Image (cartoon, rainbow, N blue to C red; front, side, top):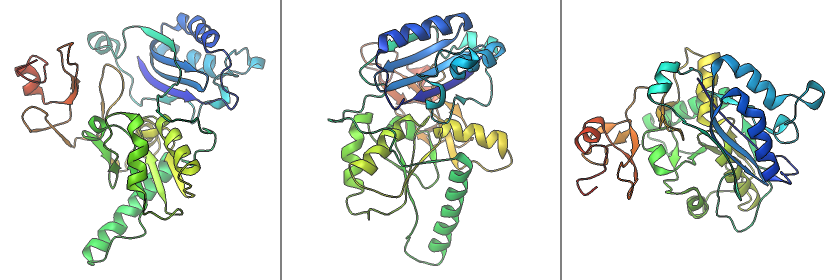
Amino acid sequence: MTMLSFYAFPPNGIPDPDSTADQLKRLWRPFRALGRVYVATEGVNAQMSVPTNVLSNFLQCCTFTPEQGGELSNVLGTYMENGINIDPIAVPMDDFRDNPAFRNIHIRVRSQIVADGLEQSLDWQSAGYDMPPLEWHQKLKEAREKALAQHENGEDADALPIVLDCRNDYETQVGKFELAEPLNTVNFRDSWEVLKDRLKDVPKDAPIMTYCTGGIRCVKVNAYLTQELKYTNVSRLAGGVIGYDRTLNEQSPDEESMFKGVNYVFDGRMGRRITKDQLGTCFTCGSKTHLVSNCKNENCHKRMVQCEFCTDSFFGACSEGC
């Protein structure tokens, strides 16, 4: 199985999300694809697993124009920012059966494809510069070298880009880019107050770089930074950490990844390990770990960083009480 994700914010929106959801179900059912897909008037957000032997046909279904026999160009087509994020390593079918990332396909209509809590909708087409992964990689390398030189020379750190990790706290605990500052939010809708406080004394032309798992949250974050907070030098990692991981593996496999640890993903895998670094601290015992799980007590279901020993000892629960 091949894991993939994508999102689209069509400029004119989706007039009839219910009809579009039915269309996606009809077109994708023959591929036996699994996953979680949200459809709203603002666009489409999908995390999926597709049988590798029909992957090329699935991609054609999503991207072909009407002239090529496609039906989705008005929904997806050229509106899929950065195309479709495909994990660099397919999951063998035996492994997928033992630990499925998804068990069914759910295509649901929602009010938003990413719940943001904003009082007013912004223009998602105006969201700063979409920085290609290799350019992002180079800028972080240069910033790291400059920061090290400033430290060795006893100089104050200045003129470095502000790199913001726009994921939630449990995600950043197990993996992040070097030099990144986590927003440490519990929910995405908490981001706006955190951003206002963090950037209140930052000049409006300061370089700000943002990233998230697949790129979709940063569309909203950067739209907010440019339109509400009036920052003028804002960029976001094209394709998010997933796109960065794939691009580095395919185009610069000898380069050291600037992302360390595990990229948390929203499916049954709970993460893809990018480097061997263990950045997380076990919620239960305090030891280093890279594992994220949910408490097995259905009345709790707390998402937590927990080591393998404690997961076994507490039978998947977060505490003795659960």
